[in-house]
Image (cartoon, rainbow, N blue to C red):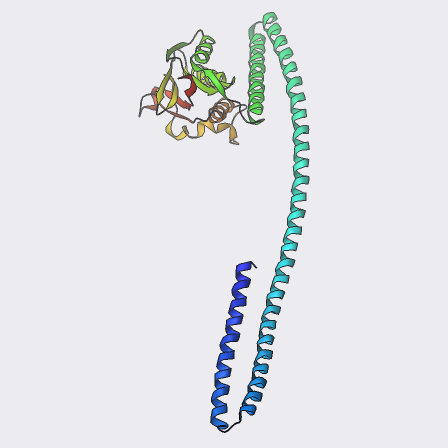
Length: 321
């Protein structure tokens, strides 16, 4: 109960007392004049004092009862606040305990993941080495099996690397810094010497980190992998509405309209192949990490069978200008 409410209640009570007192005094004077027209001054004084005393007792009782109600309400409010504060304190202590447990579990889980990632990575590298030796020593159908084994190990190494990068992204807030977008793109294009890639861009400074290259590695890699023989790829950089817009286009089979929204979320879906969608999931969270957005559309509007265009935005480093 706040101070304003208590003050209003007190004024209301005093107002009631004053009104009732005035009414009773008026009635008393009328009755006295009507029934006792010849009353003496002494008798008038005595009756007035007696009646005034009676009214004072009545007013005091009325005010006391009102104050008693207010006091009971305030006491109940104080008790309720104490119960709420006690419940809040217990809740806070419980949340702090749960938070400490979660932090401990998080550290333990990360420790196990670090051990598994390190040991599995070493094991896969050794397995890949032996697979290469097998391919060199076998021929015919056996060599084919060994080649499939090597591809499977390489896929496992790729998945493990992507998962490690995703863990790094989720580990904390990004530390973005001015990054030479042109240099990153040219370096990634050089990693695909056998692909037909055209680059249309200009030097730009964007806000990113050292994982920006993973965006182009995955988008160009997917275009090469799924585009088929002779696929042509175009990487285009331009400035639109104060942002840097990048697109990676290909002449491959394209993406149906029904799959354009889900393509970046396939990894999060239950029905998927081993490692399927990890690359584009990594691309999406990286672009969002840099404050941009990503989408896919037809290379030729309205004709999805003529290839896909993955476009995304990045924040330009305005200080560079």
